[in-house]
Amino acid sequence: MKTTVEIHDRTFEILIQEENIAKRIHLMGIQLNVDYENRCPIFIGVLNGCFLFMADLLKAIAIPCEVGFVKVSSYEGTNSSGKINESLGMPKDLHNRDIILVEDIVDTGFTLRYLLQEIQKQEPASVKVCSLLLKPGALKAPVEAIDYVGFEIANEFVVGYGLDYNGLGRNLRHIYSVKTVPAALAEM
Ligand code: IMP
Image (cartoon, rainbow, N blue to C red; front, side):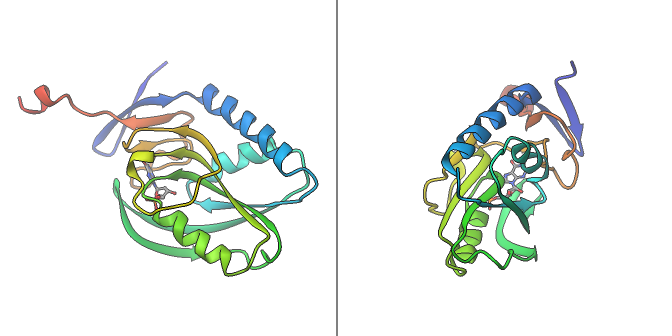
């Protein structure tokens, strides 16, 4: 199996294999089925990055539920700009409903904080966050506990399984992290 991939000017290497992503999502689905039994929650996916995670997670959900999406972006290259652009608005019918916000990754937490504020304006019954990836070392916005996390990863840039590097890499089956050049080699 090829373990590295070239995207634009960078080399990435496998961080989390497809099989391990699938296993983890299966377990997250079981947990959600138990926690939300008889509650008919609304899953709101944060586009674009969530699309594969959302699809696989929802296939593991066996309880009645609704699905919606919101589209935001805050990234330029490999850094969060901190400024949130919303291009597909928040679903409007969240009053008194149980909301599960589905993210591909929580990095600085700015996007999440913004989205939670938007959801709270509609006075839902409850809001929980389900993120495939979390970079605890990168959090800058204080966000309440992120309730369901697939994998905690180091503060490094990742692509694949929905995540992109300047538009490319979303279709990759594994999650890859950027390969850093050893300091000794970088100086040569
Ligand atoms: P935050 O607002 O900094 O938490 O970033 C949230 C969004 O930035 C995520 O939903 C992703 O779309 C994007 N993002 C954050 N970290 C990465 C990364 O390592 N690779 C690709 N996209 C990322």
